[in-house]
Image (tube, rainbow, N blue to C red; front, top):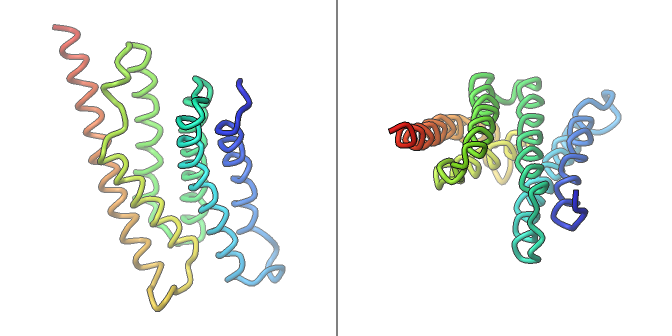
Length: 190
């Protein structure tokens, strides 16, 4: 396991997960609710920034590694799953949308692993729809974590709306990846 700046940022993202979760489960009265929401939002935002930054640095510094390529998506999925589970527990996110997003992440990770073993990982490379899904999902989670109105904007309404859009995009991207994998396997069998 090469210890470099990009991998260190990925590890940081994983280490932020228990801190992020713990913020919401501090004993009542220790910290005002608004401060809890703001702190959790900032932790998640830092994690989201490290997700972008570690990939950018790995390319920029030519520090890409097989371990980093493995760990980065795992860290992303753990952070998103933790946030969605907490949001469902707090009744801020819908169960159906959250299950769709978490289930898809597991299914597509398994599909990518399988396709990589077949030497066909390019068939399930990240697509534009996947990037759009991630953007909607991250903004939705940030809004739902913040919970309070922001500049007169109902963050809960907008966050739930965006999470539903992210769930729709999640299904769309999943079917896209499944179709791409199916085409590759069908062509290989022929």
